[in-house]
Length: 191
Image: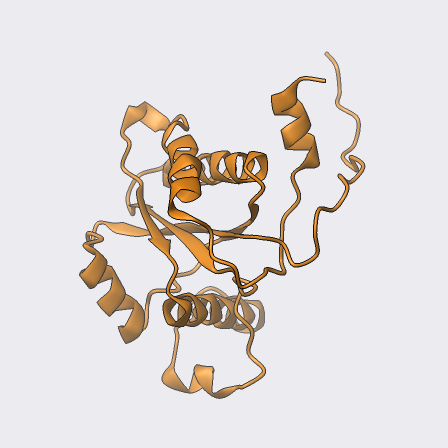
């Protein structure tokens, strides 16, 4: 089978990571694959932040988890509150990954999400080919909406015209290589 297709078939999301950091040269190769992704109108407006700061990753990952939990209970108009972080059982949506790629794109562009997820998929496939585990964590709510997140965006120079689109966790799997799963999709309709 073709090497690229086999890489796609074998890639699995990793949700348990070793504390070992991904090396810079490896990350640069992975990012190059992301930047090679097609995007609507060739606008190339995504901004990527490679975060290897444990404190930041934990906070944003927990923010994401809080918002998803609140959304599931209360609906779409949920916000982060300082007391949300008091629960010591709260887990980060980033699964302890040592590196998190954070993608930002224009708020008012119809194809921002599509561009972000295509970029993320390229990153995951490149990571797999280099022996690095990954998982796409979708950003449907704003994990940067509290003061901590807003300060980060300002510090990183993310314009107010952009929003978080998706995250990709990167690291080395604590569970080793898992076999590919069998396809469970319904058979296609051939017309």
